[in-house]
Image (cartoon, rainbow, N blue to C red; front, side, top):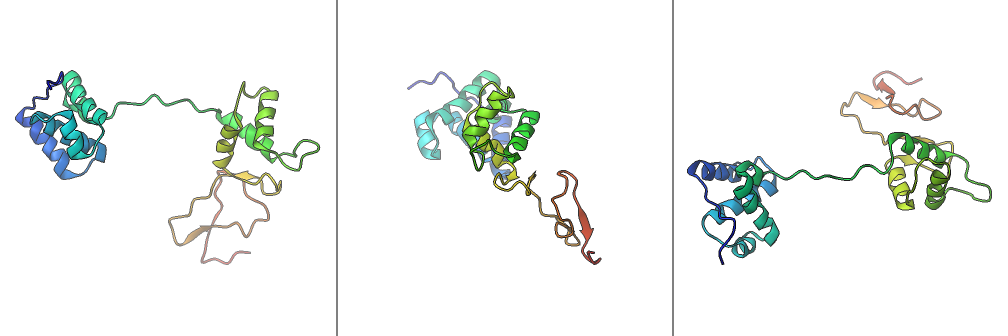
Length: 190
């Protein structure tokens, strides 16, 4: 079967692709694309390349097409992805967290994700939000909706130094988020 996108490599391009494969200092996807282009230059069909390299046919076809249309750099690189904007802004997420830590509505022992989503819409913080999105936002923090004393603070990251550590035992309440409280462990804690 004749291909619309025929890969014709120069010696310089072939050498560059072999370097990409040999050095191993790049992503596996980039190495796979280099293999695809080399095999395509040898005259292999998309089906043969896909079977040999254990790739999908579209994974084989796209680098070949990008090479012919845009050149070697475009064929090896990954096209940018648009992504979707975050469901909540920072202010809205902070409001949600504060709401989750507040006292639940009358007749309820605790907030549910549906109640939180409905309250955000009711208070006109956002036009529409699903309980699943509320759960994902809350999961990014260490919050305990059942205990108001705990509050909400970012997940603590272990220190890389053996001499320093976070001192939560010396403070009766959690400290302000974003302000690390560290002490030298050789000095006694009062």
